[in-house]
Length: 88
Image (cartoon, rainbow, N blue to C red; front, top):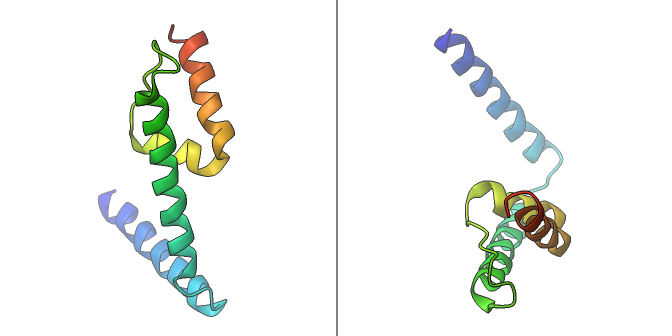
Protein backbone atom coordinates (compact mmCIF):
# COMPACT_ATOMS: atom_id res chain seq x y z
CA UNK A 1 0.00 0.00 0.00
CA UNK A 2 2.81 2.41 0.87
CA UNK A 3 4.45 1.65 -2.45
CA UNK A 4 1.28 2.55 -4.33
CA UNK A 5 0.91 5.85 -2.46
CA UNK A 6 4.57 6.66 -3.11
CA UNK A 7 4.15 5.88 -6.80
CA UNK A 8 1.08 8.14 -7.06
CA UNK A 9 2.92 10.98 -5.32
CA UNK A 10 5.97 10.62 -7.58
CA UNK A 11 3.85 10.55 -10.72
CA UNK A 12 1.87 13.63 -9.63
CA UNK A 13 5.12 15.45 -8.82
CA UNK A 14 6.53 14.68 -12.24
CA UNK A 15 3.31 15.84 -13.92
CA UNK A 16 3.34 19.11 -11.96
CA UNK A 17 6.94 19.77 -12.95
CA UNK A 18 6.03 18.98 -16.56
CA UNK A 19 3.12 21.45 -16.49
CA UNK A 20 5.27 24.20 -14.96
CA UNK A 21 7.99 23.93 -17.56
CA UNK A 22 5.72 23.09 -20.49
CA UNK A 23 3.66 26.26 -20.07
CA UNK A 24 6.78 28.27 -19.30
CA UNK A 25 5.44 29.48 -15.97
CA UNK A 26 8.93 29.57 -14.56
CA UNK A 27 9.46 30.37 -10.93
CA UNK A 28 7.71 33.76 -10.89
CA UNK A 29 4.55 32.23 -9.46
CA UNK A 30 6.54 31.00 -6.46
CA UNK A 31 7.50 34.58 -5.63
CA UNK A 32 3.88 35.73 -5.74
CA UNK A 33 2.76 32.72 -3.68
CA UNK A 34 5.48 33.34 -1.08
CA UNK A 35 4.51 37.00 -0.85
CA UNK A 36 0.86 36.04 -0.30
CA UNK A 37 1.86 33.65 2.48
CA UNK A 38 4.04 36.26 4.18
CA UNK A 39 1.34 38.93 3.97
CA UNK A 40 -1.23 36.48 5.28
CA UNK A 41 0.90 35.67 8.30
CA UNK A 42 1.46 39.39 8.85
CA UNK A 43 -2.29 40.07 8.69
CA UNK A 44 -3.04 37.41 11.30
CA UNK A 45 -0.19 38.68 13.46
CA UNK A 46 -1.59 42.22 13.34
CA UNK A 47 -5.02 40.99 14.41
CA UNK A 48 -3.55 38.96 17.26
CA UNK A 49 -1.43 41.73 18.75
CA UNK A 50 -3.25 44.92 17.82
CA UNK A 51 -5.64 44.79 20.77
CA UNK A 52 -8.69 45.72 18.68
CA UNK A 53 -10.36 42.41 19.52
CA UNK A 54 -9.16 41.47 22.98
CA UNK A 55 -10.85 38.07 23.07
CA UNK A 56 -9.67 37.02 19.60
CA UNK A 57 -6.48 35.05 19.09
CA UNK A 58 -6.04 33.32 15.73
CA UNK A 59 -3.25 30.74 15.81
CA UNK A 60 -0.56 30.97 13.14
CA UNK A 61 -0.71 27.56 11.52
CA UNK A 62 -0.72 26.41 7.89
CA UNK A 63 -4.51 26.13 7.77
CA UNK A 64 -5.23 29.70 8.90
CA UNK A 65 -2.41 31.16 6.82
CA UNK A 66 -3.63 29.23 3.78
CA UNK A 67 -7.18 30.46 4.31
CA UNK A 68 -6.04 34.06 4.44
CA UNK A 69 -3.66 33.55 1.48
CA UNK A 70 -6.52 32.31 -0.68
CA UNK A 71 -9.27 34.67 0.51
CA UNK A 72 -7.18 37.76 1.31
CA UNK A 73 -8.35 40.22 3.96
CA UNK A 74 -11.89 38.82 3.93
CA UNK A 75 -10.25 35.60 5.09
CA UNK A 76 -9.04 37.38 8.22
CA UNK A 77 -12.58 38.64 8.80
CA UNK A 78 -13.87 35.11 8.26
CA UNK A 79 -11.49 33.71 10.88
CA UNK A 80 -12.42 36.46 13.34
CA UNK A 81 -16.11 35.76 12.75
CA UNK A 82 -15.61 32.03 13.25
CA UNK A 83 -13.64 32.62 16.41
CA UNK A 84 -16.27 34.94 17.89
CA UNK A 85 -19.37 32.93 16.93
CA UNK A 86 -18.39 29.29 17.06
CA UNK A 87 -15.50 29.08 19.46
CA UNK A 88 -16.56 31.92 21.75
